[in-house]
Length: 369
Image (cartoon, rainbow, N blue to C red; front, side, top):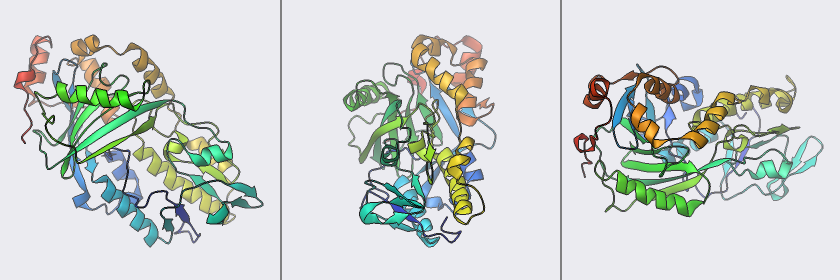
């Protein structure tokens, strides 16, 4: 919008755009390929992850990859500051310590009180969007709760893999993970919201105990802890009204199955900016009337979310992890296409030849502190 010659103001509640983050900050290859906004992302802010090591509840694992596919673990505070600087270089203003409070409709836009007036209002303010509540738009009703520890200067074996753990007792409805990030190791989990944050903290303690034979962080103090709710119910309704719309987590634009939202937020947020600019220059109708029709509906993923919430079985995952159908399903989830077993993974060869009944946790690499 700023590049199109409009005056744009971003209201930011925090004192610094990089503080108090609630995301793991992992960017998928699709976002790098498709989102021009990420062009020039500094190499020192990312760590490339080339594959996934998926663990069954009994800690057996398979290694998965897809030709040419990768993930980027990020120095997320640094990426947010880099994006904010890029925003300001384009001509927009980012005003920190200034939360959105309320909006009153007026002819041709909104009165935001002390903040001023605007011709168009975009709610990009997270899963509990104040903009959505102020305008009577839809809001998120289904959530995962995520918690993540960052351990500074820690190292793990196989740092170029995303280590993902399935365990219904620890992470019901989702997964836990260990990822080598930028100068830190990120250890986290997300689970269906039932008993709130205190239960997630207890689950994190149980997770650290469980993975201690592989990665022992129990005697290390986390450099930082991130926590927050992740919408998983699909796009809200309504997601727009005259001269206003929601994007990102505020719109529920998060995969109900994978909980990934960075790619869709950047993709549809960028397109929304172009559509709003075209409207305010008089070239197209108000995008609130047509643009939101392009938002993802996640119909299949919502069905899979329903099934995973109700029928997740540790016994089944223990039995099926090494089979081709499970590998194919996991590859679609992680890589959006068919992936491959890593032929160098001896645990995979053992499962293909002998099944997966034998516990091989003792053969897996331990953390190198």
